[in-house]
Length: 261
Image (cartoon, rainbow, N blue to C red):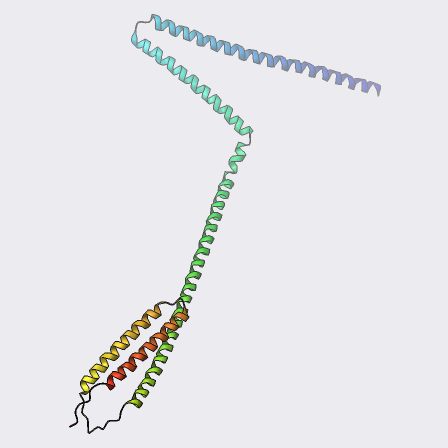
C-alpha cells in the first residue's frame, strides 16, 4: 500500500515536471515565432530598401528611356499591390470584428424592422380614413338637416298660401254677395247697356287689382324668417284687395245708364 502511494506520488511529480518543461518549451516557441516575424519584417524592409536603392540607382545611371519608363511603371505597380494588400488586410480585420460582434444578429432583424414600419404606415392610413369618414358623415348630417329645414319652410309657406287663398276666396264671395244685395233692381226690357265696355272696364280693373295683390303676396312670401310678420303683411294685402274690390263695385254703380228705348 505504501509502495503504491509512493509510485503514484512519483508519477505526479514527474507529470508536474513534464508540464513545467512543456510550458517552458511553449514560451520559448512563442518567443522564437515573434522573433522570426520580426526578422521577416526586417528582411522585407531590407528588400524594399534594396529595391528602392536599386531603382534609384538605375534611374540615376540608366540612359535608355524605355527601360526608365518600365522601372517607373514597376514601382507604381508595386505601390499599388502594397495598397491592395493593406486594403485586403483591413477588410479581413473588419469582417472578423463584425463576426465577433452582434452586427450579424442585427442584420437578421431587418425584416422585422421593415414589417414594423409598414404596420405603422398602415395604422396611420387607417386613422386618416376613419377621420375622413367622420367628416363625410358630419357633412351628410348637415346636408340632411338643411334639407329638412328647407322642406319645413316650404310646407309652412304652402300652408300660409293655402290659408291666404281660403281667406281671399271667403272675402271675395262675401263682397260679391254684398254687392249683389246693394245693387238696384233693373228691368230687362227697359234698359240696354253697352255690356262690352262695362265688362272690359271691369276685367281691366280686376286684373290690375289681382296683379297688385299677387305682387304684394310674392314680396311678403320672400321673408321666411318670421312667420308673424308674413301673416301681418298677408292680412294687409287682403284688406287692400278687398278695398279695391269695393271701389270697383262703386265705380260699376256710377257707370252712366243708357237711355231707355
